[in-house]
Amino acid sequence: MKVIVVGPRGKMGKLITQIASERDDMELVAGVAPAGRDYIGQDLGQAAMVGRMLGVSVVDDLESVIDDCDVIIDFSTKEMGMKVLELAVAHEKALVCGTTGFSAEEMQRFKDAAQKIPMLYAANTSKLVNVMNRLLEMVASTLKDEIDIEILEMHDQWKKDAPSGTSKEMGEIMAHAMGKELSEVAVYGREGVSPREPGTIGYHSLRAGNIPSSHTVFFGGMGERLEITHHSYNWECFARGACDCAVYLADQEPGFYTIQDVLHLE
Ligand SMILES: NC(=O)C1=CN([C@@H]2O[C@H](COP(=O)(O)OP(=O)(O)OC[C@H]3O[C@@H](n4cnc5c(N)ncnc54)[C@H](OP(=O)(O)O)[C@@H]3O)[C@@H](O)[C@H]2O)C=CC1
Ligand SMILES: O=C(O)C1=N[C@H](C(=O)O)C[C@H](O)C1
Image (cartoon, rainbow, N blue to C red; front, side, top):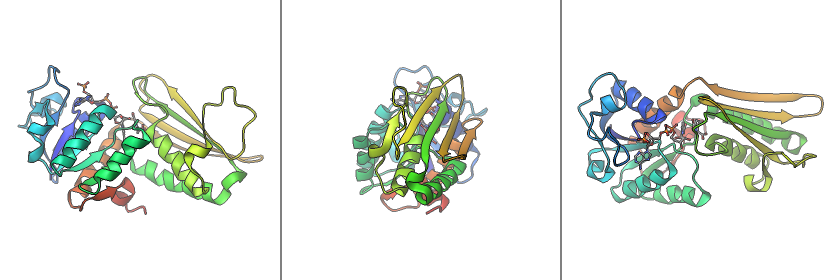
């Protein structure tokens, strides 16, 4: 399965390149980086600090290499994400997108693209986070309005979006489990919003240092509290999951896929 990595110098792109280079079922054919970077033209192994040459280059123009691949893996920015999507559709290439921060309208463009290409979107490609999502669904569907739900997510100081894509997915899963839409119940920050309105889901984002990713969901009951937490120690779990998604997608027909399909969690 031939793969292009978009953003191979990024925190995720580097790890995805390193992991893909070790897998027998993946073959890297190019990296795509922003124009003007000093590592354009370098060997992908050097640019992504793999520790050996891979014999393929980093380019600044996806269109010049896209026909060499089966699947594109994109963890870059939302602006680049939209350009990658457009080219993937035009060249009928499978796309794994893990970038976060897209608007509802942009997310709809991914869903529309699925009529033409195998499209997998996952705001979080960690296996354990996706198992955690099942637990959240179970608690929310069992207790509904009996409990207060608050989500606290922590990330590094450089993260561009807040709240995290994962916490939005978690909120959506729990809202649907309670028969609601997230937009009806989400409250972003509680400062100045007290006492608490029942049936809402509160969001709290903390940014500090180089925390890779932590998500805690607090279920507040009367005289008791349940907390479910996922901590990542680095970005490896997400990169491994992204490679699994790409291998899965290479064999699929056009359609919209999620990591639940890859992990057989449905
Ligand atoms: N789904 C999941 O499980 C996860 C999702 N993410 C998401 O992935 C995205 C990237 O995260 P992260 O790796 O931490 O971010 P980084 O900022 O470390 O990396 C982003 C990369 O994208 C590259 N880039 C920016 N613009 C372009 C462009 N026009 N063309 C090609 N490449 C471009 C940057 O290049 P340069 O380095 O040269 O500036 C950089 O290498 C974020 O949206 C994040 O939330 C992150 C972790 C897990
Ligand atoms: O930027 C990150 O680091 C992460 N982003 C994703 C998100 O927004 O949820 C996934 C994970 O939390 C790491």
